Length: 238
Image 1 (cartoon, rainbow, N blue to C red):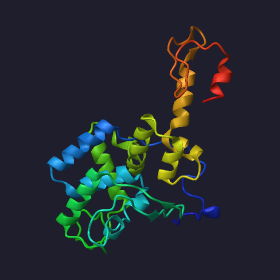
Image 2: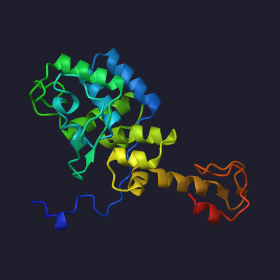
Image 3: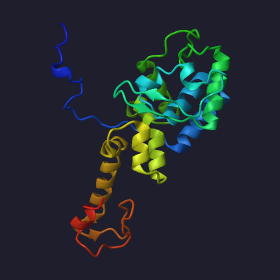
Image 4: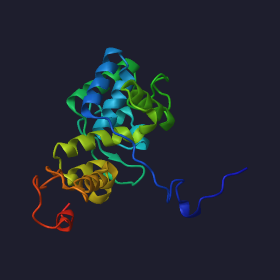
């Protein structure tokens, strides 16, 4: 039986509630990178670190070529210039010094040229890149190795991890939104789960049968003592 055509180009998940996939914490990515390096999994180590650094969607990450990340001299670029396939907008993701070393090692170990796709794993150097399903399988495998349920993780776990770590460290939403290639800061807040996290904090701060919690944690510029003003006035500032 054939599939029904989608009207107006609507995606399969239109109008369906979708749970956000979990991200990896900084401690977890350090632990995972150390494991991949010790076991000499150079491809997966490069994929992990480039995915974390660039915060690219899987469709853009997997289409990276050696030429995208290197100069004609072979040196690894710090800043990339890429057009996103989904939005057609340009982003300029950066690679840290540590990631550049890992990418250089993978390119050398695999014998790739500038024409080759970067992430082919066990395929020949000039082969097509690994597919999205393969990437998801790798991410879920990393989650299992870290002791997590695989169903909670997917390709977006890589894309969200560094952005969430930076936000919690105080990075402005505007910069994170630009790095992720989002059109609005509101989209970034929703994507990172910031809005729902703030709502959760606000709701848990008051028990209507016992009163406010002794120490409130409502994010930036929040009062840490019992509020003097109505709750509605405080919520409006979040």
